[in-house]
Length: 367
Ligand code: 13P
Ligand code: SF4
Image (cartoon, rainbow, N blue to C red; front, side, top):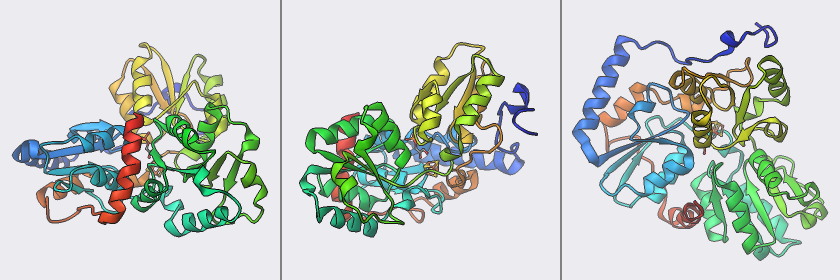
């Protein structure tokens, strides 16, 4: 079925998951039993992109900003289980108390965008820039989707972390402290944020770590230096998708995540973090038609939760699935709780945690 031929009914996402099996029912019962046994000594954090059968076990469900804030506020919990991806659990580890323990139920759940930047690349970029710039005037800003060591780099160099919900605040924060900012690893969040702040295009430059620049001139002129990284889930949405849904469904509202390309964001009605998207959907009146440009499990859950609204994913043809978020199954969660304290624990070396914490706390202060 081509997108053109699709009808409203056919493109409406209701579910991405298979129906529950007797094994699923048993796993759910076991997870609940273990949760009850641990009581307030256990907290489960679940990101909005988690499978719909995993989400209800979250004591807190939200975007990466909210969940990191919750991780920092759990006074009673001895164990924090993060149903999400590695950088989220690592950030929770850094922000919670040293005596608390943090787990990721599926240790293979990473983030390909976070892997598009590493310590050596940033050190090399920094050294190269230092050959012709005063580095005390450049503020490093890392997206939450990055390794703890890069968050530590920001902490040690007067920088800050941001999420999709506070990138604008983080950019402003950086410009109050320096003349330029160096943002990694999401070029698109960086571009969309620069657009929101009205930073002219000739004051931005892209740093491609796979093809490092040789000409310093554009970097001397730029105010915003953007790492060439991207999320393969969000960059699949196109401006043509927005045009198509507007043509097919007059009155449709289009809401997208800021990891989408700028031409998609420019054509959307609203842009924001996963928490913003859930709130936006909630605020639309019954009968609304809403196309969402983000990960499919969130869209599918919204479609289930709001049967009085017609909700579907923006592309209508690519299934925008984050396979890493999808890795965490009921079985993984049950096993993690069963063996709490014995496996799936996340560790961050003290020296890295100390500097990363500075940058993360600055982020929490931004709100
Ligand atoms: P949020 O911070 O909006 O939850 O996004 C996290 C993420 O990884 C989006 O792809
Ligand atoms: Fe990473 Fe994209 Fe998955 Fe978010 S949706 S965790 S940015 S790969």
